Image (cartoon, rainbow, N blue to C red; front, top):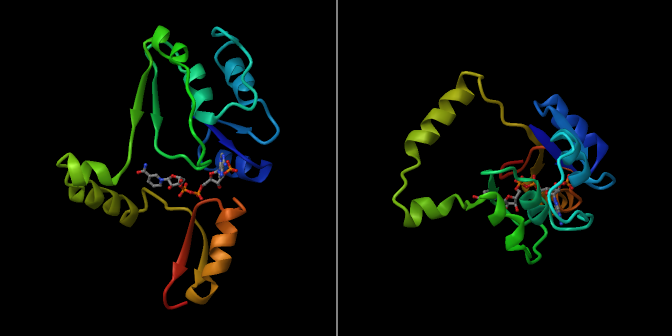
Length: 159
Ligand SMILES: NC(=O)c1ccc[n+]([C@@H]2O[C@H](COP(=O)([O-])OP(=O)(O)OC[C@H]3O[C@@H](n4cnc5c(N)ncnc54)[C@H](OP(=O)(O)O)[C@@H]3O)[C@@H](O)[C@H]2O)c1
């Protein structure tokens, strides 16, 4: 598993938490480093710096690869080039957690019970970054907006 993050501290945290490799996207060329991991195989046109992460991902996917999109933190349009995926038989998946429940007949209770059980047995650990009291809600938002968190940020109603 290769993780990317915007600071050396967060990359180190990802490595401590199971990532095999880490890339600081704020100062490193993500596509160049990923290409190194793939044995230097180049795919088509080759200048990627500054492109959106999603477009980068399409260029990195191998033959028959799968790319999943489940957020757009940048809140910018994701411009893609069909030539970055169809020649390699790459599949793009969209995922939004509430849609399967509201529109696709998915009942999450079985999966949630399994997850809760894994947490209860200590097999799964949820990384909590920081708990803010309700009166510190503004600080919690500023903390998130500064991208400093590693893990979940909670506002405690009785804090
Ligand atoms: N599809 C779904 O069902 C689903 C479910 C839950 C959450 N989400 C979405 O997933 C996203 C992440 O959630 P989270 O709880 O992991 O939030 P988070 O802990 O706040 O992570 C957001 C991280 O994204 C990176 N980031 C922020 N602005 C960016 C930008 N302009 N360009 C690139 N990277 C940027 C920052 O990390 P670095 O700077 O270190 O990269 C930031 O810490 C949210 O947008 C949330 O709405 C989707």
